[in-house]
Length: 141
Image 1: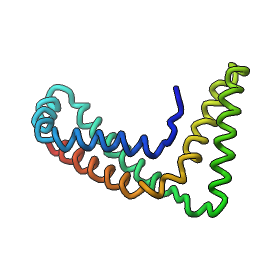
Image 2 (image 1 turned 180 degrees about the vertical axis):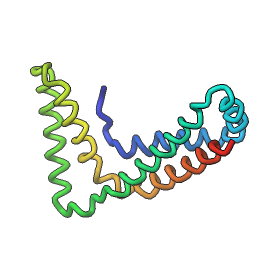
Image 3 (image 1 turned 90 degrees about the vertical axis):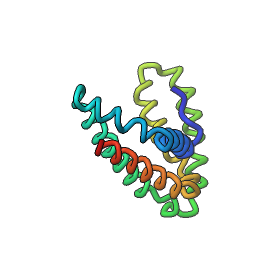
């Protein structure tokens, strides 16, 4: 699986798409959810878990503060980009270490995307809040 170029932009894009879907369809989905609850009671659990996940995602985004890193963030980003290239090359030479390398690449993805987070952090939080509102509306179905 390819590592996204910018994790936070990708997150914003996915949240935007999901929010737009809910904006358009929540009134259609709500009666269907009501009917499904009678047949598949786990639908309530699904909605609860989605709301919980949105809360956890919001907390993590709020906890990330690239400004706290200071002036070295640019160098850290360059370092992680170089490490990413090295690890992707090493992955082919060390296939038995692929899972370890993938774990490190996941961390690199977050760190290398941090400089862009400040620019879109507010938008991401607003999208999460809007989605959570829609999901809570569906829970009351």
